[in-house]
Length: 358
Image 1 (cartoon, rainbow, N blue to C red):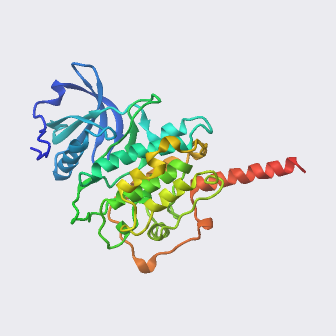
Image 2: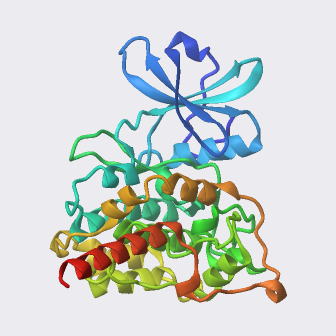
Image 3: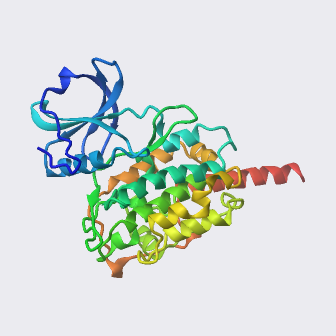
């Protein structure tokens, strides 16, 4: 049986007595697939995550179950210890997040309809989830857009954090030591011999906020690798930019907050309490309603974005840096496919405009 601090224990009765399992696949988590299931009594739909029963899966369920009461964390409804497809499994019944992924919701907005104020509200919701975890000595360790889902497609839907496959409990005198990050969101200290802790989640928050504000990531691989030497170097040196025109009208407060979260020195990086109390987050309703280019960038790079996402999730194993072999490219020569496509379109429009005015 799982050892859970909240004293909740998995059921050993057959899950199929209570739920009908669908063939509809809702997603693929780090440790198992997620399918739709329906409560036989209430006819309510839920998400069912199937995990092979092992120590890693038990830790995932334990930590997720402990924090699922948080408004901004996907709620666990039931957990079963059953045999599934002939193998001993943990079957985790969770609320069904029918609103889909964060970035899809942003992309679906009309051009110019996504504002800095909305971005601040989104970050407030994400930070609330991370604050709930960190105050309970839990690090998520896989914060990325794919793990941020909406409850419904309605305008008042709640944004929630999911997938605790890499979550780990940590204490003030104990740092996390298992490198397991998605490349785009990996913190500098994970790439070297330094131990890392909850400050890695703050780094990932900074990367997520950067993408929310403009539609492309601050760090990226130059060579199509899961994480290239140049990408490692840029992460470890904190080399990124706020390029025009995408960042021209973004407030200085937003840029300063990102800088605080992307500080390469974890001892100087903002803590979650600092982020949540930052004026841009805490008073998001007062943030300017400046239109952002995020949804336009995502639409223009729609064919490329899945490749970027694949790169984000391709390498979740040990990532150590050979300091002597690291190479670096100047930012203006780096190959960010989303930004390159955007730049090309701007140049074409400028050329067309110039021709018309001759």
